Image 1 (tube, helix red, strand yellow):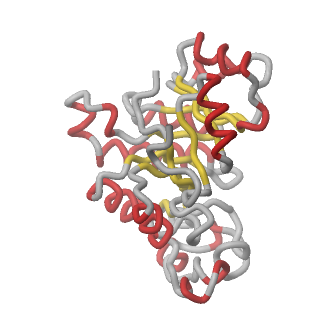
Image 2 (cartoon, rainbow, N blue to C red):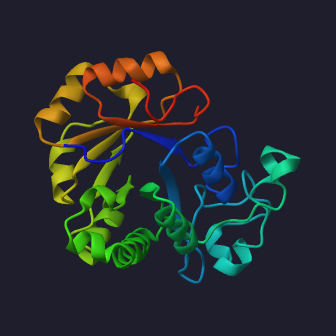
Length: 250
């Protein structure tokens, strides 16, 4: 049910490099990872950028919200100093450039569509349209294991992604699986459920698998917990601790 890599570097370099940056991506590659989870949202001009927070100040120097700035302005901001002087000046990546780099280096992508409030449909549609164009040949050839997986907590974003690129696979993100989780996932033709491992149980893991969905967990940072989840039937997970959990852990 899960045709993709099993262990992903969370936002690139986990705790070892600034999240959602080229520096993070390259640090993950240094540790052998060829699969990544990262976040995408829209700048004011509708250009998608690789960022997790809809506001500035935590990982990107500045003030205000992402949609207060055009993409070229965000790309000139410092997204690395918060983690250390060695990363000073690390820019906010543009989604297209980041995804092209991943594709060129054989890095599989779990792209989390992370819309700022009120921009759910626009973000889902834009990310799906770009990813579909970038992987049109692979989709046409049925090489789905190479195609990115779009995930989101936002049903509206997933609906827009489905409408824009129905053959691009989608996953429904849920911290906890509420009653009625299965119809919600089926409403956007999700191929997988992405859940917070802290709220998962063996019974829930079995229910997801029995329903025919792939099962992915975030964010697993202890090797012992990772092995326990795999024993439950979890098929894949992302980790911040790329120094403790290798991409080929058994």
